[in-house]
Image (cartoon, rainbow, N blue to C red; front, side, top):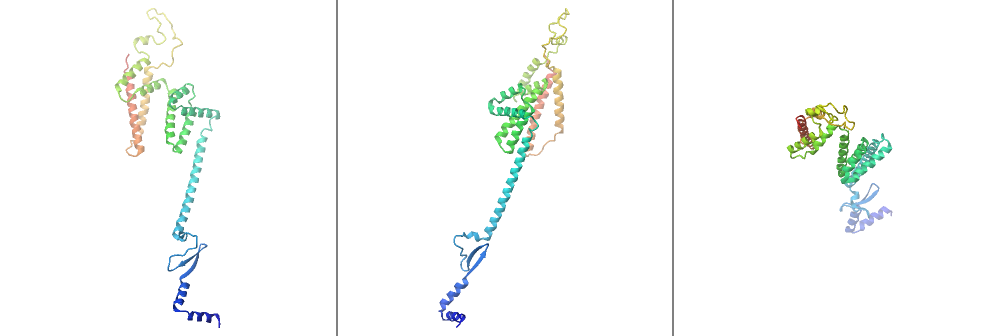
Length: 312
């Protein structure tokens, strides 16, 4: 009797219920292999997983999501590396701006700017003292600008605001020192205006002008500054002005001429600028600047008319 005969005979003599159970068990389980992991699938139930393995590991959709997440992480890492390289290049570019200046001067300028930042409430006095010593130069402005540029790149709002004000103040002081006496007087008169009482401001400006400009009456024409001790009747006195006469004396005619030239230049620039009609943030800011500029121009025009019609 061979093995096949024994097997078939054994199955034949088994009870019907037992035979059906054996057949069912033999046909209800199937083993599969996927990605190096083996699992057994039960047709009647959902899955019978290997011990210790989470069920979602065998989900194709979950695996696809994980692959997409991995790609996204690699993409973000690549973007971060590129952004880091870009910032390094920008910082290197900022640092190279000062290479043209002597190293000793750069160190002094950096120390001066640091003293301005630490001064806080006394920064105005520090700036004026530095201007009197002749320490405010283009290099100082460049150092402040570099710090401001770095703060903008790092989006440090408080530092941006402070450094921007410091840059404008130092620049104004430098321009003030380099300006002519007429422009310095014009700047001082404009600063006096508080934005409220225009007529009172004009009266104060008139008093300052009469004190600043030399008198232009017949006597002052016949006896210019330096010849006050000359006796016209006796024709006796010094023929040359004294050496202590200030050469920076500002004449009214010089003030009128320089202010008029300034107004002509500003008006020509105004004509070239386009009128912004948009309502985005940048356009609104530009319009506000234009309004402020127009107000300043009106003040300068009023000062020019006052100087032209000035009487002692």
